Length: 174
Image 1 (cartoon, one colour):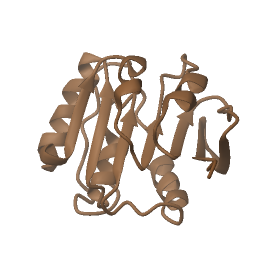
Image 2 (image 1 turned 90 degrees about the horizontal axis):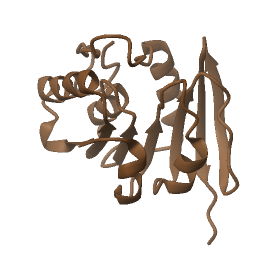
Image 3 (image 1 turned 135 degrees about the vertical axis):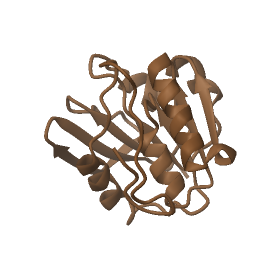
Image 4 (image 1 turned 90 degrees about the vertical axis):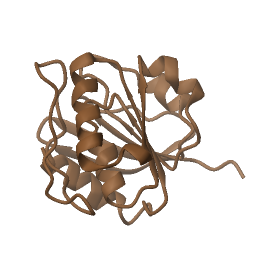
């Protein structure tokens, strides 16, 4: 795992010890950013990385110009890797780590420009995630197809091996 682009381009990332998480592949991450860049400007953005693991997605956003990233993670090995990666890349002043289950932190998350949701493959939290997110743009990463709820519009959907990627935008009610 590494940072693909931006100020930390090429820098390696530490993954969590054990098999409790499955880091996103560089190929899938690069595909996500190729789909995202025409849709969202990361310069100055606030990003939420849910089920953060090593923090690969949020750290990539920081490297590409996001102002701030909020990471939510509960697993001790993942938290150790996440803190190491934040410190090693020099992003401590722009990163905040919330420890605990996503469902506990979801109601109190600040407004964000973009949310990345990468729950464990065994979980299926999509209804509560889409209902509880304050971000208007969501990237979902899962092993199964990600169901889209009313009030959201699918912008892109791709498969990278076993990984299913969905980019969706909240439908404006203005």
